[in-house]
Image (cartoon, rainbow, N blue to C red):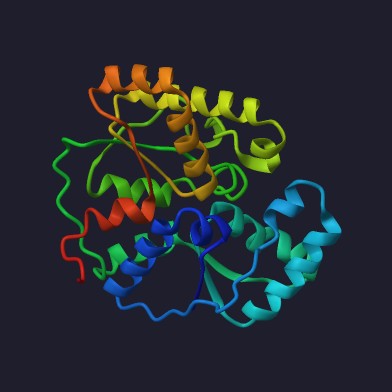
Length: 246
């Protein structure tokens, strides 16, 4: 198995990659990392740079063909699963971390702390994993095993976007921030202390808004008496392992 970290987890949010590798090591899963990983091509595809994306995709496919591929990023998962077969005529044997983690838990290879029901956690459905790939249940099943999952009013196929996808964060930063604030408002209504998601882009945008919007942060802290913790599913799981390898 090749663990394809993805650009954001590899370069900006490295804790996602570290947490994922820690879980794989704990479950004794054999995997490798690419020396030069490159990009899956998702962002170029979504922003209209088809020719550039195709060149990237062909280069990346040469490194992955014949291997099972594990991804942290919802965008990578969507791209490998749906776009590569359309562009290359080749299927990628790809699995998202949420799906693998659930299998490892069910097989007893990852043991979680008991669900006390005291900790309120909400889950944000990334567009690429949810609406595009219809994977809604695996992350929820995992969270529900070790915490009290509180759903936002808009969830699953009706979930509000984080505001970062399809180049919106770069081209229209004000729109991106506005959408993220609305989604964080959905989070606030649940009274949750932790927001879990499965997309580094979503995490990056939410954290950016939390840092730059001081008035919003103050309001949020006043409501919850503490700062919201925003975690990838891998980070959430590492904190709740019954036994974690040193």
